Length: 244
Image 1 (cartoon, one colour):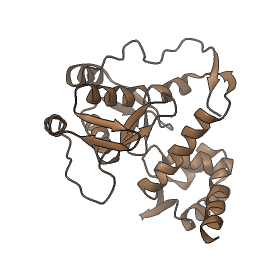
Image 2 (cartoon, helix red, strand yellow; image 1 turned 180 degrees about the horizontal axis):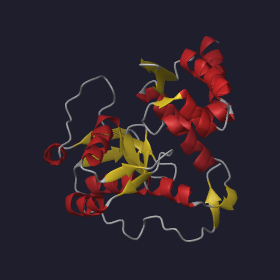
Image 3 (spheres, helix red, strand yellow; image 1 turned 30 degrees about the vertical axis):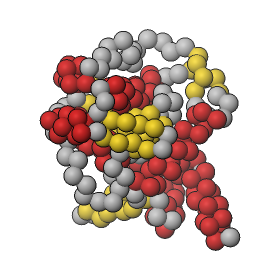
């Protein structure tokens, strides 16, 4: 009964629109202040503070004080996996609503951060390329990096030496592509490396990522991935089904 009560409490916390918006913003992997989260959630600073206290108390998010500011972040990869799973279930199992798809939505579908790894079309394309080359094996049960994969990723600059007990390599169901991208330490290292190389840049106030000119050539040369025809455009969007 204790577990059931805790589940109800967590569901209630995540189910509030303002808190869900804050959690979604923090899924970008960056630590944000209460003021930034209040702006993104469309609530006042005092209201945001009340929500954040509840989320910290429930250990869904963690807070770090730096000078006179407090920065909030997702508490752990476990919480991030829970939130991404909720989004995936909502996108796949719930009947879609029809509404105009915005440029912002297209940007999220193309490339975004999913906690600390790359998701969207770019993330799935990287996963597909690694699987096709025999570097990574992804199944419903888990993920594995082969010997050739370790050599390839080491040459790419990814540090695959475990520094914690977190999952090493795991498939993460992408809510927009409805296929796997790579999570765990391997996904985090790939994400860190593409940022360091300047292949992907963060969009302001969004989880969306922008593919740079260096990124287009880098993904093509290193992974054999060409996404030129899939990049979001600025044309007027059509009505298509979106996630609930």
